Length: 229
Ligand code: ADP
Ligand code: ADP
View 1: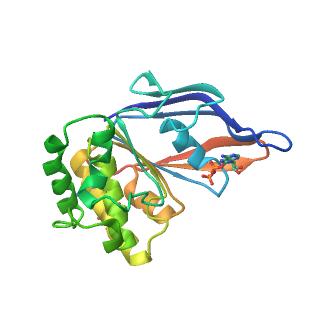
View 2: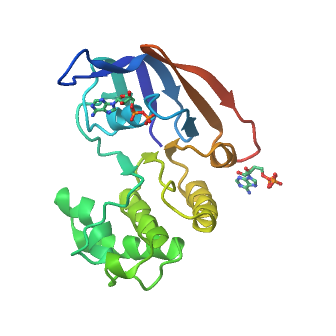
């Protein structure tokens, strides 16, 4: 499991008209390896920005962001990402979607195919490897997106409202499945959600981000003690 260090990180977006938008203002946060951290807070408080920075999708404006001591300047090989939409490629089979990160990195597909099928079985999609995204429901596709993020056993799993687009029943099931998988994998998870219920259920630490004019603080962290490990 990977350690995450966030030191004095600020992010502002340049917008064409007027002043820059300050999305994060000097955020400090350490995440211990193997912890499950949920981040909640109102829309616009900078949650997605924080995750995009950690995913290496956009650069910090100032400060330092580290994954296992490496300064993040591009997507880190130890990080897997899941977004609200599944972002599956509709012309590729389920198996080929899960193996996409392997192909991009030029690794041997065959060495990971069994693991991909194993992950599918873990999320209740045994036998779906050769189907296509259009043949699956939204919840099933999101399960596939999680498999794709987990194919390389990432030390850090970044999730941005992964269940936000799902109906209530599917969401409940996915929350249970994610917990089961996490207990098996025990990697570090950063989980953004609007659902305070799923945050409290899944996480051992819930961080509440609150917006203030021109400033965003990570001003309240609730550590949830539980006999988990
Ligand atoms: P959250 O995920 O908590 O809803 P975001 O990180 O998406 O918050 O947004 C934080 C702030 O940054 C908001 O004011 C938002 O409008 C602004 N913002 C986010 N992305 C961009 C962007 N690409 N360009 C300009 N402003 C942005
Ligand atoms: P409830 O309030 O539904 O009775 P439990 O006491 O079963 O909840 O669990 C409280 C919390 O502890 C849950 O949020 C769950 O995440 C966690 N938990 C319970 N049992 C386990 C377990 N065997 N492994 C990991 N986490 C567990």
